[in-house]
Length: 102
Image (cartoon, rainbow, N blue to C red):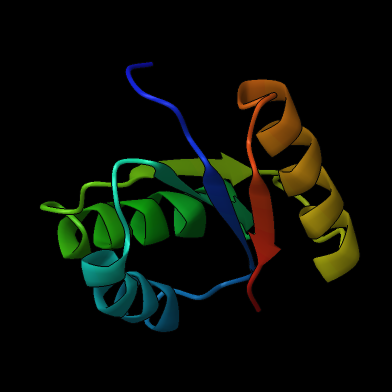
């Protein structure tokens, strides 16, 4: 990974096939290469693949790092946020801010 990630945005998701790509498309102009977005999704693997594909299409010229994680089971919003925070702290131990967006 090149560069320092200073801010991580965690987005818990469940079957957000339409809303999530639109949200990321709107966010991309405000994100920089020092930002990472972690999408923690509890959808089925088939729906997750569709969501990931649509999100990547809607953010193809974004400077930020996008990370998609799928649990494969509906474990709830709080569990998704917790897993996202654990992932953020593991991948980016010197991160300055972790924000949760729902």
